[in-house]
Amino acid sequence: MLTMKKKEYFESLLSQTLNELLTEAKKTAGGMTNFGDKSPDFTEEASLETDSSFAFRIKERESGLIRKIKDALMRLEDGTFGICEECGGEISEKRLKARPIAALCIECKKKQEDEEKAMGL
View (cartoon, rainbow, N blue to C red):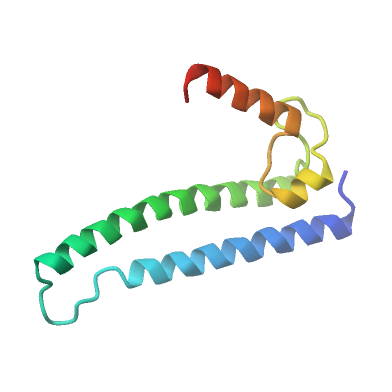
């Protein structure tokens, strides 16, 4: 069970990270296609396509992380933060500090990764 001080620490950490991600996402989206009044030439179009593809992959990762941060904040609110979703055991504070979005204890996460590896994922 988290103390109030630790709960506030993780809530602040997660909220700050979420705000930074959302701010960065807005900047990335806003600067993607700004050519003013002129049309891009073929080289600029190719570069823009590459940049767009790269930005899209980053946005996919960011949106997944944003979802995980929101889930962690909800777990903080409902009192299940720090409790493994698989076995119901406690997630170590060391693990939570390293990865505050963790929903699985280290043992269950390792088991999950081993199963994914065995399935070729």
